[in-house]
Length: 176
Image 1 (cartoon, rainbow, N blue to C red):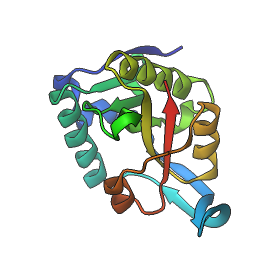
Image 2 (spheres, helix red, strand yellow; image 1 turned 180 degrees about the vertical axis):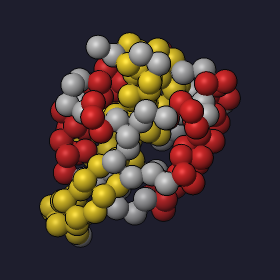
Image 3 (spheres, rainbow, N blue to C red; image 1 turned 90 degrees about the vertical axis):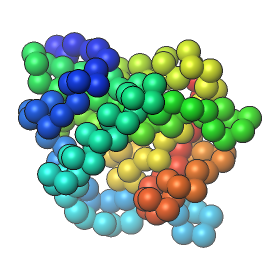
């Protein structure tokens, strides 16, 4: 059974991710062609290198330092899932807050951890005055099934910086 809590700035380092397995085997992804979404074969294994972990650590530290939300699921002392939401509303009347990451360790997927993390992010964002979460989401079919189950739909207003950073990402929003 996982325990959930906010992650403090001083905890965010490489050791925090020692028991975390990012690995995701992807076979199909959603791609937007013209104005239509289609599923395409695009097999690869998504995993993080040491450089990716360092970039993640830097980003999560920046999130906490700027007043954002970083929340984790722990089994014992091992991090098994986390979510982060950036501070600062954007998107005009959409009043978005950016859900910048949500990940569950490979061996813990399918146990409801992602739902608890997502719901925690929604609750925090609502308290911060947001109307919606904005998610630049992985386009893997399995990832999109999760986001749809969480109530996400295609974003009404897209964030250009996310499209530039991840051209194959799915730009989503979730009403709070």
